Each structure stands twice: as C-alpha cells, then as structure tokens.
Image (cartoon, rainbow, N blue to C red; front, side, top):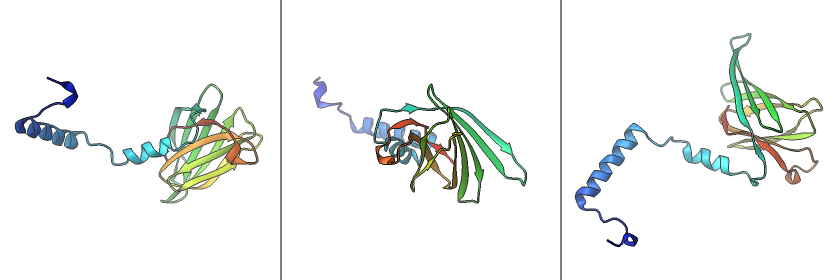
Length: 160
C-alpha cells in the first residue's frame, strides 16, 4: 500500500469513526473557550521574556461578606503578588506588588484591551476597575514609551 495516498476507509469504517468522534464530543468535549484562550495567550508580540509560574492561589474572606483572592506568581527574576477583590458583578479591583521593586510598567491584558500602570518605588500597583474574565499580566521595563519597553515577564492567563 502506498502511504502517501492516505488511509482508505470503507463506509463501515467511516461510520465507526463518526460514532467514536460522537462519543468523545459527548464525554470529553473541547472547552467552549479553548480557541479564545489560545489566541489570547499567543497574542504577545515577543517570545523573549520570562513566564511566571503560579505559586499560590488563596481565597480569603473579608469584612462585609466579599471574598478576596490572592495569587502569587514567581520566576527566577520576579515575583508578583496580586489581591483581587470584587467591585460588582462585572468588575474587580487588582492590587499588586512586584518583588524586587523597580521602575516597571504593569500591563493588564483582557479581551477588551490592555491597561498599563506604573509600579511605585515599593513595587505596588493598582488596577481599580478590571472587567471580569480572561486576563494576563505583562511586566515591562519602566520606559516612558510603553511600546518600546521590553517585556520582562508574563503571567499565564487567568480568570478574574
């Protein structure tokens, strides 16, 4: 058999393949947001940066019944800790800290676009109103022109 022609299926084989595919679609379907999440993750323009690893994710109850989620990401060069608290059903507030502190731009990428803030000399930054959903943090050099600032580190995509 010439393998360059590809496999030759009988009508019975094709029916069996379709039935197996139906079983997988029912038992283990492709997540509805998989394509969106892959496109979001691949949208960064440069592969020359450190990918931060999630280290800790803690849900803390706070006064008033609202919960605050604390997430820590780290790598060999940088640690980011963020505290995510609910503002309303559509938005959250993100308070963050970089270690070691430095003159860095922190960009929050969402499906609605990107927002950039500058970390202060203690490494603290605040994103006051962030839409809920798929997000990613990008830490860049603290240049005045964010478009020219090299990416230092990126978090994996996360749901806020």
